[in-house]
Image (cartoon, rainbow, N blue to C red):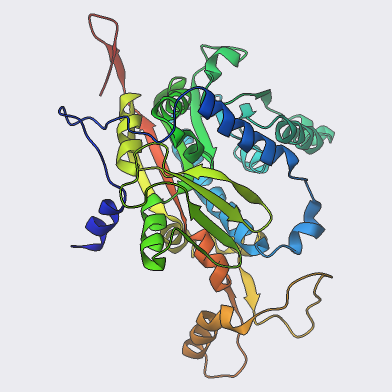
Length: 387
């Protein structure tokens, strides 16, 4: 069996007699979905915006910067594709679905978005996002570039977002959902609702992009560990479902990431995810794991890597100052960097940009996806037909 076949077999797919994915789930729709949504909202509402100094002390400081760099590269790529399809000076309308505290606001500003819709399940996070947005445009010269903006709290897995827009007939050019869509895979109903929210206002030919944990990678690590609980000092996963035959929806696990995340999540069986997207007129145009994206963009966007401090300098410069509370470097976490340095230089002194082994293990849990909205026509019964 090839690696791709082995990976695809990790998450079992159930189908009915017509070849359609069965709506198998270990969760019930309705009350259970609302319960988990409340847990997720409560978790993110309680997270404090600790500021840069505190973030630099984190064990995952460089990993978070690395993930942010991945988002910057992919958003930049699809922004360019959008602008290649529109005339100069045309509106650029974006939905940031599950926007959190507004970590991508600067990216939208750099993309010269003219209309931005920010929505999240966590009211406190959304308020912090709005405050960050207002701070960004305080200066008069920045105010001239200020886009139209909408902020509202909503559960995109249970509520129709379109009804909350100022203009429900709006046509979007880009929908972004970063590190969030997997929460909807608690049930078919929730995943279908969230996909509809991503697709229904997206204009033909434009894009839905996002990042999710790679279910095949999670299952592969579970098999390798021969345990339903695995991870390292930075992340830990505990499966709470049948790992021998996980359901398409409701394949629950608890995810802990340092002191940033500690809440239930759900496996996203990608063939089912792709089929759900097709139902709403979205065809897959790109799917890449984070390490693939690094290989693709690192040479061209090396300057941005350095600017965003997406990689850690190893070994640290001799005069480097460490923040109080910062963890000492463990040499075994940088054996890969040592080996690379020996191969690249005959000198004893070398420096490379890297992530610790533990941070790399956590970062490579994720993948990026991009879908394009297909042309829509309607049949005699008024049902959409996509091509």
